[in-house]
Figure (cartoon, rainbow, N blue to C red):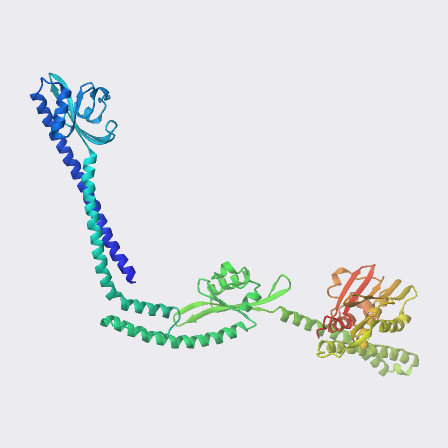
Amino acid sequence: MKRSLIRSYLLSILILLLVFSAVAYHYTKTAIEHQTYDQLVSDLHGFDLYLSEHEEKDIDTLCHSYGAITLMRITAIAEDGTVLGDSQNNKDVMTNHKNRPEVIEAKDGGIGYSKRYSNTEKTDYIYTAKLTAFQNAPLIIRTSNSVSMSNDFLTAIILGLIVSLVIALALSLVSVFRFTKVLTKPIQEIRQQAKQIAEGDYGIKVYTKSYDEVTSLSTSINKMSMALQSSFDSLSLQNAQMETILQNLETGIMVTDMDGNIKYANDTFYHVLERKKTNRQYNIYDFLFDNVIFELLDELKEHGGTVSKENVEFLGGKYRSYETTYITSEEGLKGILLIVRDVTNLNHLEKLRSEFVSNVTHELKTPITSIYGFAQTLLSGAYRDETVAKKFLTIIESESSRLNHLVDDILTIQTYEHEKTPKHLSVDVLAVAKECIEIVRYTVKDDVTLSLSFDEESDYIVLATPDKIKQILLNLLSNSIKFTSHGSVTLQLEHKEESIVISVMDTGIGIDKNHHKRLFERFYRVDAHRSREEGGTGLGLSIVKHIVLSLGGNIALESKPNLGTTISITLPKYPSSQPIEY
């Protein structure tokens, strides 16, 4: 501040002195030129009188003699522009002067005037000329003087001004320095305190000994500093608590001002809207590309209150719910609150729950209806006919068995879904595969060949339980046998570097690509009627998938209609360098 005051004060003085010097220079230069002109005109008239008194002499001689007296350059010019005499140059080498401005002006009467560079003397000159008569002939006489003489005088004046300017600046610097030292020291201390407060150092204090007004200001700033420190500590704690709460919400929150400039957004908001988090200040209309939000904001501005939209579907099967409202205070509207939730999982779970309930109800209803119907028929008197009673009881037994399998499969899936700490052992997949081949061999149709393919020199040990491997193989083999009327069903074991691959391949009816993604869902059937006729519950492949995932493996499907199906399961070897995740 001190330097700023000194610079401002000195700059003002310097500007004033420069303006004064420029004005003085201009008027002095003008005055010198006018004085030179008046002197030249006076000498011009003097030379005219001098000629009238010496008409018997040579004009060139008269120019030299008068020039020696006046120290001016004297030139005599004939009416046609021929130079007849010159006090400083040889007239015979001088060019014709008829086109010189001062000569032309003199011919018209009066005094001719011109200021220009002289090619003869190689310097700037001021010229004056007049028309007169000598020896009964018209004659133009001209006086001139070098501008350098005027410039020398002007230079001396400028030097004097510069010296005066330097002395004035030096004296001003001393006085300004002494004045600002007394004035600015307490203000500088207060300014430094205010700067520290602005930077967040609210506890700073300053003690200034100065005139009463500055001391009072310092005391007030100290009180303000302490109050700000207390308020800042309280706000910091509240902000930290609020930030922790907002950042850990599963709901996206954004706050903008009334113009749409984003003031706050938690991490969840950026995640839900799939936008990269940024610290730059953006307007919501430039940063977001979500028409739903823009529609909500338009509706909010039109109607006020709270505006929301639920379960809005987007590409990729994602769902979002939106809600927006105004942020108000006693002064009025302060901003806009926008809430966004990703409800994709909720919608998916609700859909699965609805489908599961529907499928279970449907699957249970069919055998229960059959059992109930045939039981009523028997109770109505059919039990007296032994043949009919035996047939109906056989059907009831079959439906009861199907119902029992269905319940068992549902409980199996529930067991694998909620299994937290499975106990796995080392299992020889080849031994279990051979056992399963023997179990299903008697269910294979006459035109179908059942085979087991493996490498005799390899071992097929995995971390599992025999029951789980057996359930996987029996489910896959049963499906392949069920839907293969001719050709082959092959169980193949492959030994990889870090895994064992179990593949069940058939040449059956195959599965259209449209069904591949849903094939492992509960109760999903490609041909529901045929599956029920074959006694299937629609849960076999879903059970297989859950078992494979619980063993840390993965499952893959390849199938084309009328070309057969291959289901491959990859399980980690035992021992494996990759731990199984339960």
